[in-house]
Image (cartoon, rainbow, N blue to C red; front, side):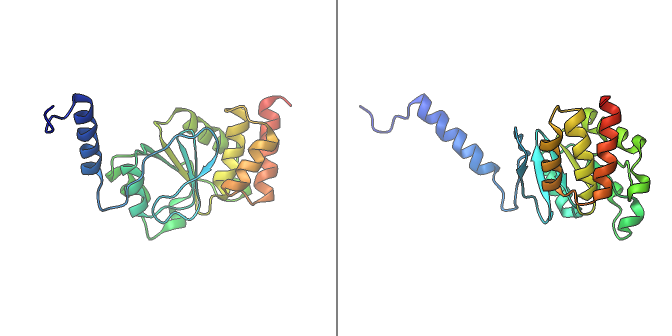
Length: 189
């Protein structure tokens, strides 16, 4: 038997390994994962980040974090912050320059958490190209929207969705109260 012969199966495995190694870069790389339950995730310097079924739930990313998210497969950014909250960074310009979709159904505080804002964010989570990165400053607003989305659009129980929302970052009792009232009205219960 020729010791230099490489079987086609083994050869295909070596080629695949070479392609994978060649694809690795010295820069950190992330793959947009899809999970069946809420999972913590890491990307750059984002302080709070979780993922579930192609939706990434986050506190404020930096410009570099958005670039990393794009490299990892994110297609759409949904920013719940007003532009005036981050005066030193033009997020829309940075995100669109990367070629990502950008939506900004901004709100801040209980008075701005209206049915229209909640409806808009839920609609984007249902229809925007995924993977999606949904963020605000601390993930408090993200947790509020997540609560409504999980119950009304994804069929989670109120208890399970509330537990997830708090893990994501929901800490405002006023937001929780508003969202629970919204869910009750929208679900007819």
